[in-house]
Length: 429
Image: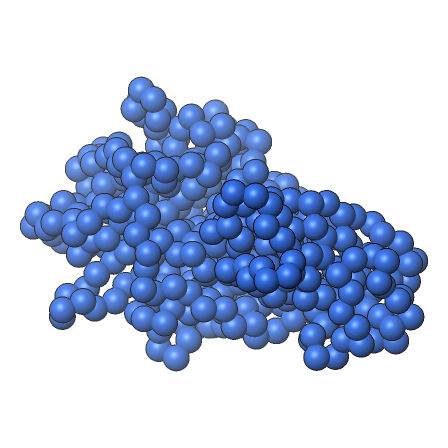
C-alpha cells in the first residue's frame, strides 16, 4: 500500500559539493587495448597548475578500456613538443601513439595547454591544438584533450566531457538520506542537486543536457519533476493518483514518456512538456512501464508482463506495429536503445542472477555482457561504446561501467553509502 504521509525535502540544491564523491577502480581492460604514451606535460617556469592535466588524460584513456597508457617510470625520455620526439625510443617500448604537451598561464585567470598527438610507427603528427580555460577549470580542459585524442585514434567521439547523474543513499543522524548527484564520468567534481529523506528514482537527462527529469517521493507519493541544472529550478509535472514513474525524454526534448496508473492500470503515456497534454500510448490489462524513445523518435521500447512475466516490447510512436523483442528468459526489463538504434540493452535474468544484456534488434541475437550478478538500471554512453549500470559489490550498491561489447569494465563505488540509478548524459558540446 502506498504511503500518504507527507514528508519534507531536506534541500533542493543548485550545486553543493558532495562528500560521497565516486572513486574509480578499473577491473578489466580489453585484450586488444591500444598502447599509448601520455608524457607528463611541461610547465612554464615557476607555474604550478591546480590539476595535473596529462595525468587526467592518462586516466581517462585507461578508463575507456580501449587504451593501455604507458607508466611514466617506463618512459625513456619526457619530450614536451614534437621537435624532441625520438620515435625509435617509443617503438622500443611498443607504443603506437604518443601525446606530448605543455601548460602555461594565458593571461588573467586563464591557463592554456598546447598538445600534439603522434603516430609512432608512421612518425607522423596526426593532431595538435592549443586550448584555454579558466584556471579553476583544468579538469574540463583535460577531458577535452582526452576526447580529441580518443576521436583521432578510434574515429569515435569521446565521452570524457559528458557527465553522469546518480542517486546515493546513506545514513545521516540515524535517518536515510537520498541525494541526486551529478559528476564527471570519472566520478570527480560531484555535486548534489537534490537531498531528500524520501526516495529519488529514475533520473533522465534532457537531450540538450540542461535538465533532469526524475521521480521523487518527497510528498509521500511518487511525482515526476523536471529540474534545470543551471539554476536548480524544479517543476512538478506529474502527480496523478497512483503511479507516476519512469520518465524518458523524446529526442527533440519536447515530450516525456512516463508510466502512469491514473486510469487504474500502469500504462505508458506521452506528455507534452510545454502544455502538459497527455496521450495514452499503451492500452492493456497488463503492467506497461519503463519506456525509452528510439533515437529517431519513430518508436519506443517498454517493459510489459502481458505475456506472463516481464518482457521487452517495441511499438511505433503512433501506436502501431507492436513487437515482442525478448524471449528465452522469464525476466527481461528496463530496455535502453543504443545511440544508433540498432541494439537494445536491458536487464536479463539467467538462472537466479540478473545481468545486463545486449540484443541486435534486426537479428534478435542476444549477448550477456556482465559477469556481476545483481545488475540493474543500464544507461548507454552517447557514443554507444560504454554502458553504466548499478550492481552489488561487498553488500553495497555500486556503479559499474562496461564496454558495449563486454570487453572491459570498471567500478565506481561511493566512499560512503550506496550508489544507484545511473544516467549517462548526452554530449554536452
